[in-house]
Image 1 (cartoon, rainbow, N blue to C red):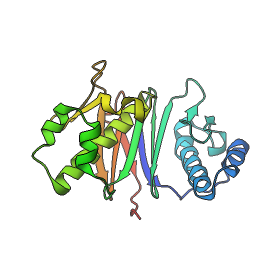
Image 2 (image 1 turned 30 degrees about the vertical axis):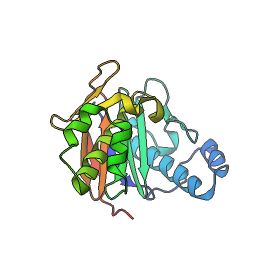
Image 3 (image 1 turned 60 degrees about the vertical axis):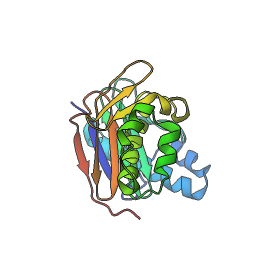
Image 4 (image 1 turned 180 degrees about the horizontal axis):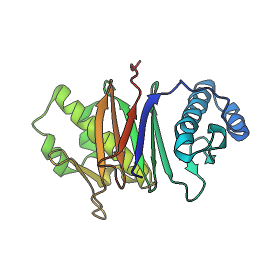
Length: 212
């Protein structure tokens, strides 16, 4: 089975499926983080249950706050990303990374590109300005965040090591030459990306939601 991707509303699944641990962990978070944590884990359990052939409560999920969620060894790899009221979930039999951002996210594209993007990639974008530059920088950003999650690394440690070819759509790690399969698209006001084996042609389920 190839990678499975879901883009869904953050809130839409009841919380009854959460484990006792998840409830306790959530209680220790500030209110806004608690809401995001509980609803994202409930959604994760909800979409994985039919894939794994069990109830949402029985999904063998280990997902403390602030750490990448994990399934029991041998059952697959998962990744999630939330932005505003949107949530993206990726599942695969091999490592996977996903990222989700609002298309309208404000950012200083020129400054971000100059600070974090390799010279070669900057050269591809030098003729762009305004909204075209912002969207190109945002597309590259979500792909690189997804790639870093795929590597189980950190944004601070690896962001400058990734280059995105805006003509071919290929990601490349400048340190070791890795060129992982990847995909990115827009859906109802969101830009999403997925990286990992099989991600050039994943199965995707999108529940249309309107970004706040």
